[in-house]
Length: 267
Ligand SMILES: [Fe+2]
Ligand SMILES: [Fe+2]
Image (cartoon, rainbow, N blue to C red; front, side, top):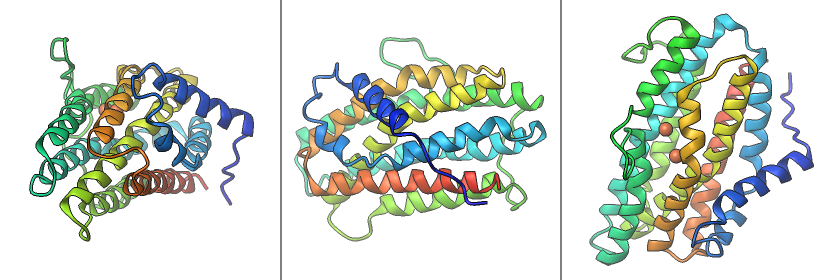
């Protein structure tokens, strides 16, 4: 079947407005307009299509689906570590002050993955919350390790795209400062697009009567993460920097490809 990626203009416009409203309380509200302009909307469309179809996936498929998608979500912990590393390693080409400001803003969403939020006691890591989500759906513990074989198509899609994203972030060409900017732009798109991603995910699982602290926790923190990601970009680059726009488009394309491949498994 050809997957229909159609999303009505009304709901796409609502997504754009919702996401933008979430960020307009920030002091960066005017500065991030060029960043938002780089977003084409393809990832929103494809995610909306996938999560619309999710309730149709047979129950017996849920453990494999959650294990496969869990790989992608845990990969983001590694991605944030890579991004922080690439920003810090621009120290030969960039000034200290913008770099430490970018790092402080960048580290907040990263720490959040491990249950570390400023002014709050240490909480469960997102991986622990995901394991609880998995257990409530699968009725068994989430495996400690991801299987190496190719038997799980959801896991195969996650591995394919996470490998590609890690390679993209390495930016083998160009200077270390350009690589740092690219990584910050990519990170901004990750956080910005995840606001809608987790809203859609929670809504889709909710239709199946499944609630999860993992989903609630993300819906609570993603707007804050996107604000910190904006601050990180603006610490090191001007908002209309061409490298930042290229990075945002690259992540949107990667996320679109990932969800398009997931939807392809529903043929
Ligand atoms: Fe997370
Ligand atoms: Fe986030």
